[in-house]
Image (cartoon, rainbow, N blue to C red; front, side):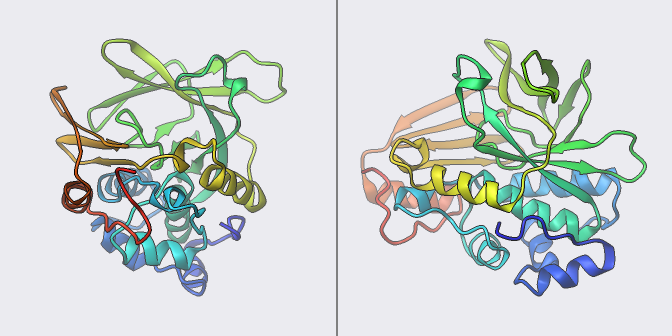
Length: 290
């Protein structure tokens, strides 16, 4: 993401991104998007959903001790042309490049994951998401294809409070939180049984730049206390189920809420499951079951 501040707009966007190794056509082919390429809400929603249903979440580079590259050419090689996924910085960089190449105005944001946290301030800003301006829409939209959880956004939501949004079978809302800073603090919440509404992450709307994400990515991808360096963490969403591998625990959640879970004990079995169910080729140097 060394060039996250790159500006690509309309017809010049695709050429500028491709010159750095990014190819919009190849990306859209990878996610299976055959729809429009306009700067409208239908395109944003369609590309967002197609990405979320096509590219898995995974942290296998940090597990083998390396922070993944955020350079466009490397993301293309890994996630578009290769049988790999990525985590939030990779996913949302790839989506940002696509949206900018299509002509959208995109602002990278950073948030604090609040799942299991005492307060938002008890966590650093280690999650990336995108603020997207849409032609004809009075408000910007929150886009995020990199939150590795069963309740993550599948479709973007408008940056407004007081409303609930249903998208591809999932419910979300945005609320404002009281805090001491000068900027409004927003929290994205997801609805799920049995606890009802629960926070996913909190964020403000000031932009973040390349240097910020390079530091975040290095810390999350290499620090021994980061949860992403300790064990494999994989997620994949399809239209009828959600799959998760957390260490040796494999969980399948169906659209009707049915959950099945089992513990993997054989490395060869685990590698087959990752290849067949997540569509990921495990890189050399990674042992899934430790």
